Image (cartoon, rainbow, N blue to C red; front, top):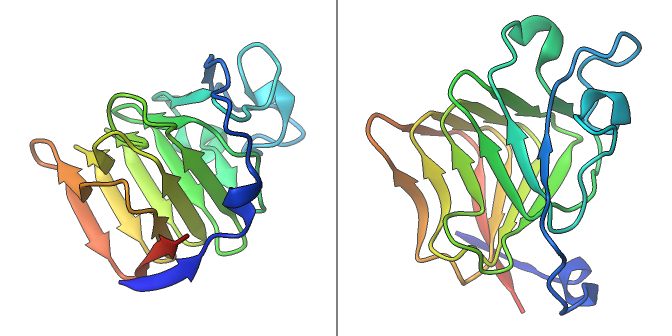
Length: 169
């Protein structure tokens, strides 16, 4: 596991933000896959710090799957439901700061394809609880809080083709 120094994360507020559930609906005609398009989210707001993001089974993965293709705002937890899909492209970056909540920083029951960077900080237990498919072709960055990188539930699969790095404070 490589080590990476945390600069961006040291500037974060120590106050725990109030969590809200933000659910992906996708399919907005002008930008059906865009994480940063408010119309793709129930409630019309892009998720931010402390939010619990839910990616449900949207039916048609070709037209409604969220894609992260740039640096997006930090979130509190990512939950991908069975049938849900998320792709983080090579130029994409997502930081999930669990703020020591129950469960993992990422809970995956669907499909998560990492081609860019995924930072998982302060998970209460495992960084990633996985009963779906997680393909790492990018960089997974963890802090020292995780007692386990990936905790498989049932038939979860983790395919490692990228790298895992540890933050050093």
